[in-house]
Image (cartoon, rainbow, N blue to C red):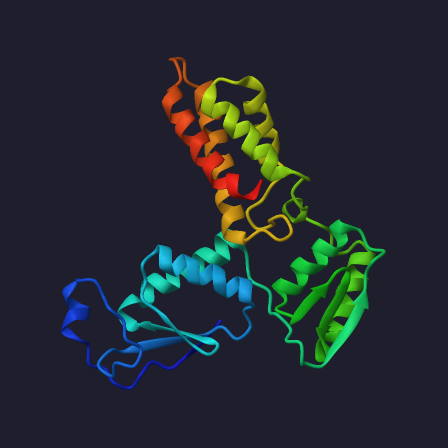
Length: 259
């Protein structure tokens, strides 16, 4: 992510230093601003960021492909970007429709191999986009992508455990199990289901079409329940059923809109 220089005006408004709610006017010359260049982010990624900024009540404004924030909130914004990288995974560099490109038709490749390739493209910061099973990359990255394809076909670049797509119906499985635990926190089948599902899902690999932030929240919900299950098994006293019910209700509410 590229940063542009801060504004030249170093004057801070008194309100900005007071700790009171900050009413951000991006045109106010008395407020020092920081610009973040997000030209490589697609619409869904920007929507995720906007939602997170709103939830955190962080003042911001968009200026074309840049997001503008008051300098006093720079640490909070940087921490938010770190969260996106760590919890949701590094974002791909999206290839614009009008940029010179080269197509690779990969309809005979397995899902696992295409996922491995996608992860490698993101890690290498190669501009690209997918159209079904056809990979479209920046024309000047053609040889780099050829090398990645050769490495995968030769078995030199293998799919990692967390690169596998979640099982079909994972959200539905979460909802049903959470619903059972919300009604009966000791339901053995529901507990076993979530323990098994927890080994098959990863926050960085959401189902196709689901917003990464929503999926990451669901994965964390499953992990919280599984941590509680493990803790219950190691505690000689009776388990706190109300805590499990609360965790199950939270997961059920989170997943409900998507099933």
